[in-house]
Amino acid sequence: MRPVSLVLFLTFTLLAFNAGHILPGVAEGESREQKVWARAGSSAVLPCHLSPRKMWKQLPDKTSVLWKRHGGSAHQEPHMVLEVGCSGLRKTALPMRRRVSVQDSALRSGNFSLRINPVRSEDAGLYEAQVAYNTEVQSCQVELGVITVTLSPPSPVVENEPFLLSCNSSHRASLVETCWFHNGRLVPTSGTFCSLHGALSILRPTMSDAGSWRCQLRYSDNEIISATYNLQILGFDGPTNPVVYAAAGSAADLPCTLSYLPSGFGINAVTAHWSRLAGGHLQDWGTSQNSSSRSFPFHLPAVGPGDAGQYRCAVSVGSKTISRDVTLAVVTVTPSIQGPVSEGSRLLLICSLTHPRGHERFQWKHLDSAPTNSKLAVATSRNLKGHRPQMGPTLEIPQVSQKDTGTWECSVYGPEGRLGAVEYGLQITGAQVSSPPTIFSGQVTFGLTLTLFLLLTVCVLALALQKRTRPPAFPALEGMVAVTVPRKKEMEENQKEKIQQTEC
Image (cartoon, rainbow, N blue to C red; front, side, top):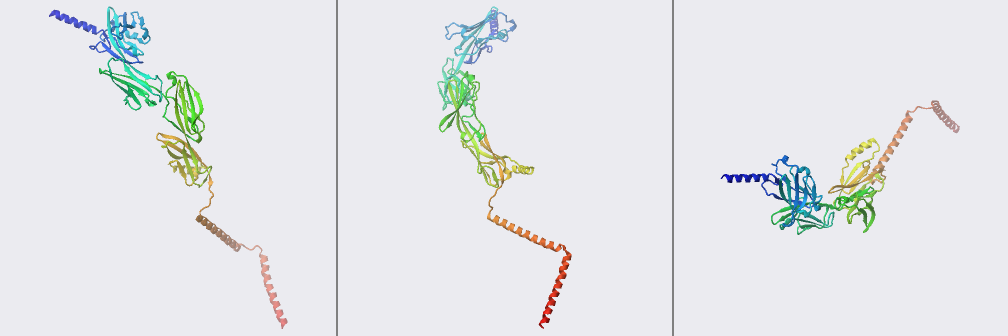
């Protein structure tokens, strides 16, 4: 029994000693060979490090590591990938030069992991690391699997131009199913998206198709592999068919902004061309070239109803040309009375919009007024409280007054909010001269006649009272007149008596 016990003791001791030296990055007790998956174009780390129970201080300075790759065939001899000698001298295979490395600081800590950046599809295979220190040589094996996401045609993807996303891996089992996810949501393979042998075809891509795409591959041995691809689509920022609203007489800027800077794709030749669709023909307006910018707006200093319409911005990026149509809608106000408005008249202000889309709403609002004195200013401020916003394109003022003087604003609203506005300045000249109604005219005539009669009566009475109360200006003269009148009567009576005597 003693020899058997001694053999078992030595066997377990050797197993424990070997297990405490090299681990391929997995828990102790599992297989010494593991598999690492990486997407082509990304980086991969093939783990190989000493067990945590190993005392790092016991690791000698003269330690070397050799990474080898086994060929695609089992009978093919492995070839060197990277070698770090005891003196620190490095040797790298020519096909993987500048793509493979180990960290010098990590070697003294027992970390011999191999880093590959970037990974290529031909890097798939079985890798083995051999670590030699003192008289011992330990090894670990890691299998690298590569999953490849291919974009055709290559980047950049242009808006409205079809492209194909394909996904495959180096796994040897047969492929059973391929699923695609866009921003975490499963993509149905119908309509715009078509799937054929694991590849996804997008016929008319839009800016909403940009973002994270993930392919998930399921094989017959129940192995599930996935990879993520960040899709960038070169197009225009903003809505598909933008509409710019501008007030008549104001300036307008038509937008033309790319989603990405072309230089980010290695493209330096960028040209933007503006044209206008008028009368069925495109009229050239201007060309600009700037490779360091992605914005090419078109400026109109003062727009009118004749400038409204459809404009086109065509941007040539390398050998590809993309275009975006922009509609200019002009907001105008048409008054029923041209020029200054007389006080008391009826006024209509009609707010109109060129190229309406059918869902616009109009709102009228009185902004301010122009009072002539402080009292009128107070009255105007009070009257402004009575001016509530009115809905509809037509504003009716039945009888214009001074409180209506000032700026009236017509705002255009849509589902997304306020789209634009136009202002109209109302000027009032004074009282309106017009023929009053018949009844009102008769009342005025009667009132004027009665007033004149009363004035005349008052004047006559005033003169009469003035004569009674006024004293005589020449009292002696009035006495002479009074004496003269009786004497005359006496003379007439004497003459009558003389005539009677003579007849007798």
